[in-house]
Length: 205
Image 1 (cartoon, rainbow, N blue to C red):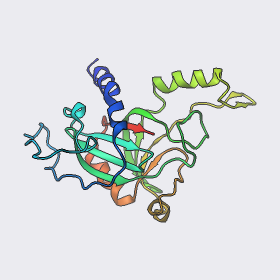
Image 2 (cartoon, helix red, strand yellow; image 1 turned 60 degrees about the vertical axis):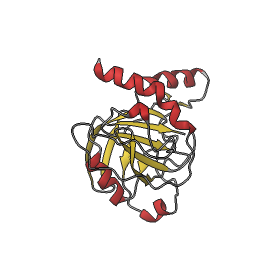
Image 3 (spheres, rainbow, N blue to C red; image 1 turned 45 degrees about the horizontal axis):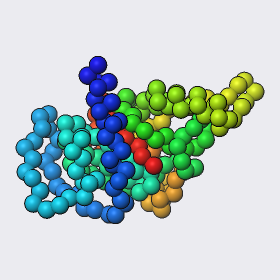
Image 4 (cartoon, rainbow, N blue to C red; image 1 turned 90 degrees about the vertical axis):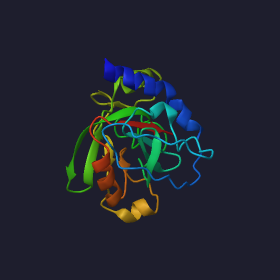
């Protein structure tokens, strides 16, 4: 029940993040992640809304992925700790069905982590979740899901955050994945250390 309440609260306030722009920012420097919330000194100047997330102040680690800006932002107790360049699925928009080469949008959680021979690290998300299943059924009704010989295309799965086997694509900001979020290998290795299983990941368009 505690985890469910936590996810519901974050879902309610996630829309606030969408108000932030894509202007490049140098994130403030913060101490290493600790088990208990650090004492935060109020900033002496106005801070952009995406540098401080008041609604995530009790989350030891929180990830916000911005598909429009091409970034993955790592927060510590609601404060921006790191920003990584990221690339996504080959087609824009919200994921609708398996094989559409789109990255899903919504609130997810890292449910598994491991080393990967091709992509250095892989952090699996809990896609599809209940919201995805509800949306999928609506899309089937609306005729947005293609039919196949054995029925409709499914929801898909195995969506996560991983590295790359062609960093030139990532550096050129080419969206090349089949729906996952790809970082440079040095960045995914750092994120792998900082974001434990159970970390919430909010993906916005």
